[in-house]
Length: 492
Image (tube, rainbow, N blue to C red; front, side, top):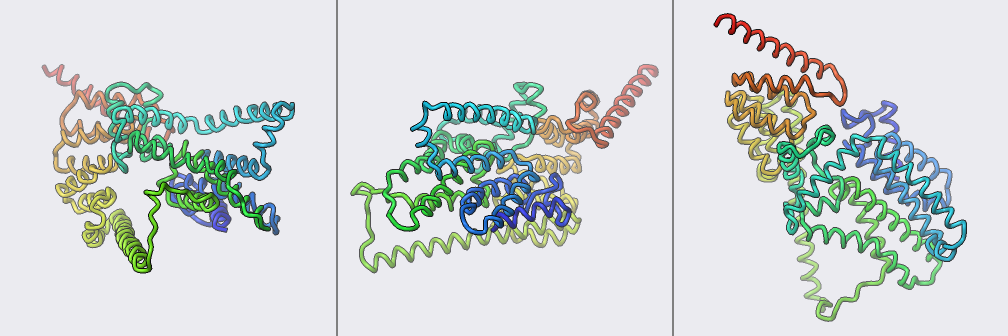
């Protein structure tokens, strides 16, 4: 039902009834990222496939058709992979295809099936790659750099939650040292996640984190063997119970497949589905018999009540902490909207009381820094952006600190911030333009000329009026500098 409502919402966004939650994509669903919505819809596919066997098939068919339309509108390749994996695994388990293939592996029908599969898979994979080639090449570059990073800290990694900060700084150094080729420079840009959960765990948690993630995924995948060994109770709903397992297992396989090409675990709607699927699978397997020394039972009413009381108390305490952070985060968003609309005093009143809950949140410090820029308190603004950089290395923090240094006329420091921006995203014209202007303010003619020439020689990914404006200003500036040099020579 949730999936159908979300799908209808996507279609209505496309028709213009509702606005998209992102300026970059016409259809996003109720989330601000279309990939999240698309993957969520893809992972609900096994439910629809199951209900095709039940009553009201026409209603389910219409709902599923709307879902497929929504997936097409959302344009997420990972979701397409998840949908196909869901269907293959679900029907493979429902009709026991593995046993049928084993029994008939020498027959021409099975061989023809394998050949046909390859004939479909190869062009389909090529289509997925070429449909968004720049994006695919960008991810290949992310995986390459992430792999190099992981080799430098193979045991413990860089720490959980620090991928974004450490990766962007590492990629900037990689580019600075001339290791990136021209194709990689085109595809380089700020990264939040590596779009591969195993690689993410390898970078953040080292080989230990990688092993734990692999064991977690592996335990769910091998559940199909455990299920085969489990004696299913003979009752009227055996078939339904098997189907519930098949739904969940198809969802798990789809989740893992998507996790290899996109981010999943950190995204709440998608991770919630994994938890539901994993819970259903675990409930249908034989309980694990622990060794005697680990098999601790809580005996007695007093101990049982005490144990439950502690669990309830800890749960309430954690809920209280998380609720406080969630409320503060919502207030922080309000302050952000107000500062963007130049209601800086009102934003400052809201944000000053949020520090206790958001002291380690980069968005809190960024918003506070932007408020200080609006109120021309640049010294405090710099401190806020520098604090945010303890946990993040996204470009907006460097833009903020660069603006503050410019206003304080500390041009060498502003130049350092803008040079880092150019390394984060070499193809971005506005970053080089900021750098060129600051070199000019610092009266560094040589580097002003070099940066202006870089702007003129840089090829845009997508031609636009802004790019032409930057190139025109750079051209005029070069002409002006050359003219001044000529006049100085004549006067001498």
